[in-house]
Image (cartoon, rainbow, N blue to C red; front, side, top):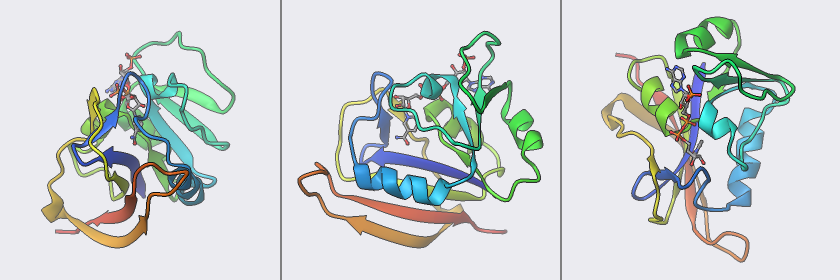
Amino acid sequence: MRTIVAAMANNRVIGNNGKLPWYLPKDWEHFREVTNGGTFLMGRKSYEADDRLLSEKWNYILTSNNNINLCDHCSIVGSLNEFYSLTYNEEEVFILGGGNVFSEALKDESINKMILTFVDASPEGDTYFPKVNWSRWKEVKSLSFDRDEFHKHSFTIKTFVRMIE
Ligand SMILES: NC(=O)c1ccc[n+]([C@@H]2O[C@H](COP(=O)([O-])OP(=O)(O)OC[C@H]3O[C@@H](n4cnc5c(N)ncnc54)[C@H](OP(=O)(O)O)[C@@H]3O)[C@@H](O)[C@H]2O)c1
């Protein structure tokens, strides 16, 4: 299973100046629960972000540059196909963005599942989640969270699976 995990605002913004435009601790908690023990893939820019999230198992960084600083449990891949072949026998792997990587990953049918957080906000941003053809996806789970003293925005986490044609 190849799963995209992303959080986007009402205007599809996912990032601004190399960072997430919000701070939602319960979304991070949920992220940790669903990705626990899994392998991650992220683009080089997301990897270099201060608020990056790393797997304790393994992290693949998509880049065309062989000279980036690699953390423990990290290695580079030069293409999505390389990542797919290195992880073909894993039960579930997680594709964590950013915008560039989501766009490429959704160009074909390689992704089977998406866990998307819809943040009820319209922040300024420079990175967007790609437009999705929703007729190909079935919503199988939805969890809503209200705003509170720790969460400036309400948000809903929805899980979608690709429909088999
Ligand atoms: N809200 C969310 O769910 C979420 C999740 C993750 C990130 N973000 C945000 O998204 C922003 C970063 O996204 P981004 O789109 O700017 O960058 P990105 O997708 O994280 O990284 C782009 C980089 O990945 C590498 N890359 C992508 N496709 C490649 C390919 N086919 N072959 C080789 N290398 C490839 C390239 O690295 P090189 O230039 O090194 O070759 C490219 O510059 C940040 O603001 C971050 O906070 C948001």
